[in-house]
Image (cartoon, rainbow, N blue to C red; front, side, top):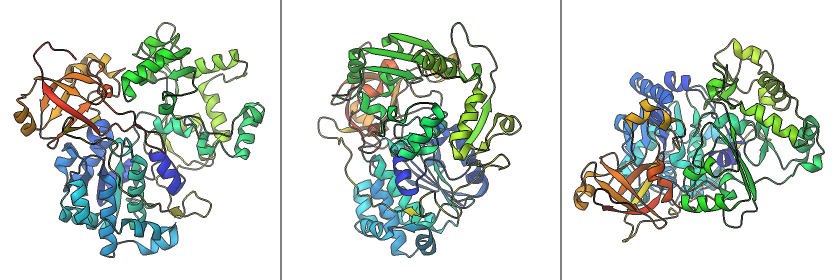
Length: 550
């Protein structure tokens, strides 16, 4: 979702800045929908050091996460109302004349469309929609705009909504209108959801681009990659492929699937539907470290190697390419992913002759302009290179967009965004809003972290955070079993009474297969990136007796 919004506005899909500049140089930090200290703890520690140094911290989050407790301003909005909040902040900035007019005139276009779009969002209207006091919205807006150097971070708390594209778009409008991008200390930082997600998308592991974000719909790009790969251009479609979440939808044309390092039977929304779909397809191959819930349905399982068992590069949130060397041999018949792919390609009649990971990097240098100066030899002697690295003597790029954006005319484009209600609202039968996410000690579907005795001992069971007043009203005490029921399914889970959530809101981590949060979530997809709406789900809560089941 971040990629679709950023491509539309900036023609980029990566952070503009660096963790070091956030820690050392920014004056204001605005964090929206990112529980960074738990989900990205290394970066989270940098943020805490920046705040301790004196950076002013604004956090927009429905929960009182650790960073919200530390924040100078906490904008505790109703889940799914971010567009109204960001539009109201920009509305007030314009009313006070705090926009960066010189930046808008020189570096952007279509500003008037957004100026008109935010006019109906005075802070008082936003207060009615978001629950955040108008005075606090004004205070946050002024502090954001005055910087002088404001860094903006966001993560899946923004993107996993029906209107996630619009949420990121409205935040980008705020960044552009204030000129808080393109200089040291004013960074745009979309914090990526998983390790090496940045590197995977850089290499074209998304359905509408080749490596380095070169469009699959561009005939010239098709010719270029067909020539490098030694295939006829006509064999390569100009039509973008399906998004991951589209593949399992009703009427999907997919009959066979090859999955690498993904566990969709736990991570997809509405698990019962996803599970039935995976049972129905003709062939499934899964390449993973362990026999995951998804791999159990596979016709073929290809055992992959972990990060410590293979050599290769990883790209983090700040565009830093780092080389990891194999430390130990893979167990049994497990092999590095690139070796499996090369063998499979050759058996499918597509001759592929990479003898090593370094040879793969040499092709990347050839086809990806932003990586032209990246080599294993350079990476061996450095703590990483931040792309773009256009030549062998280039030192890497600490921050982007100091003089132009990567668009044909060098300008960023404003896009208006209007607030619409979440896909699923609470009612009398389902009066609570469930938010899902991660915890410090586990990662996504728990494929690795739940196999670590040390980590699992810290968070061994699934819990639901519920506000003390709601718990008292329902006769629930800490540790009680409760039943959560949505419009799709139900799970039994242990209660964790906590003021981290607001009244009539609950939070459930999605790591635990025995109480899988995504049994409850809605299959509705955001229309641009097809991201599932995992952050707003209407449920009811009932105490149950010990030993009860769904």
